[in-house]
Length: 566
Image 1: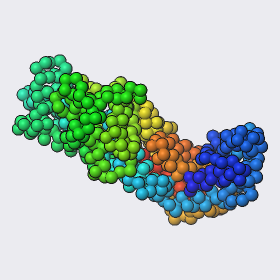
Image 2 (image 1 turned 90 degrees about the horizontal axis):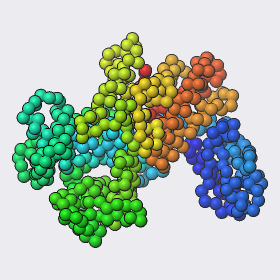
Image 3 (image 1 turned 90 degrees about the vertical axis):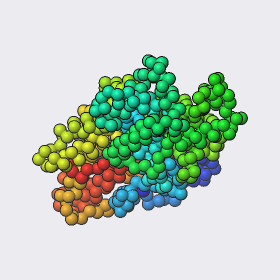
Image 4 (image 1 turned 180 degrees about the vertical axis):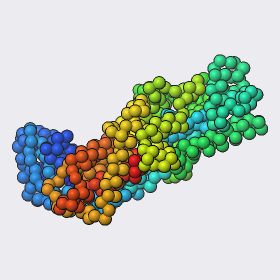
């Protein structure tokens, strides 16, 4: 694989430096933006020229001489460029064999063993029962699901976890709202919509009505104490409605969690942890227990047990880290949240480093921005919520207009439209670095041309159509061909891209690569007759098959379906 080749070449450079008496750490090879500069390039001569006491270009010349003293079949040639860059060109023979290897690996093509033997748990989505599943949860789900798949493709034993706030003021507000709704119009909406309406009603009452606020605070205590039969019944029914509803969304999104954790359980343990560590947590105002953040680190003070004696989200999260580890002894715990809790999470990790130092070192926090529509941000407090379900439905409706009614039955159109819609939404989220806000544009996101999920899906479907037309014709990666084209070379970058996506925990590297590959393939497709019966036909078919496999594997790592026909 090319990722292995890259590491091999880096080691060759380190050894060449050593032969010249220069001790080097890790050296880096990169792919030049301009392919005419070779397959890889390194600036190592510029970096170590001062140590060597000679000019960069002179050092580059000596390094090339040392490397060529032990020639390898993978390297076709080396050249020195500019002030001292060294360009590597790989041999056609190696590239042909690498293509053959890719085809033989099939569904495993692109995988690596960097995390072999490691246990990783990825926590993401985390919707709160008693509230609607909004488009912000789609951000967390898309990123978390993709990272889970990338981590698994890197050899780790991977588990998916969802952490849900089944207790807290939002639950009390919803139950208060349900009680008010039951006095009026019980047929207002579906069960899950009623919860959303009830929460909005409770949130408004809490802010604007002293009596309502008092009642909601009392309901919150009863939820923790299980001291009121009516409240318990409303709680249990609401929780079941919420969790069942969430499962329908997860199924659409292609997510299946291994573990579900709930604040009602983590809170009890988290409170105990705080009370058992008086040297770390101290008394604050009104009887609350706080953690005083180190101001020199830019950390602020957070309440872990409030004045009512109830654990806050911070205490629950502290308890969660240990409960997760006791459930699944992880080497790494990746937690996906919105970036609005970044400052809070830094305080949490600082406190965790004192209570559970080993777990703090194992915890990796990845935050994401907001997903917005051109109309603006949503708010569950005011009831102006853009739900995940409504966004999927609207996108699906628009996608359906792009599907041929002649080629697909009504049921097939419906199934394909949903795959396209979810692919469009996920790709819009994953195409850029996780921390940025995203404005979801329907037209751009559903385009079959350009930077979109449907464009990738359409490219894959095109490869499948071409291979189907080829029938049983010979496919030969080592077959007759003149030189190695850019499509061939770009294909072989895939394992290297997956490796980078894992190391940086950034799916956008895969999304960007797939777009580049799709464009390269469609250019090849537009300028090449593949099924022409000529002697290089088996090689061209090998390229098409490799593109097909790479697109399918890459889309899978993004959590996006790859339809066989479009």
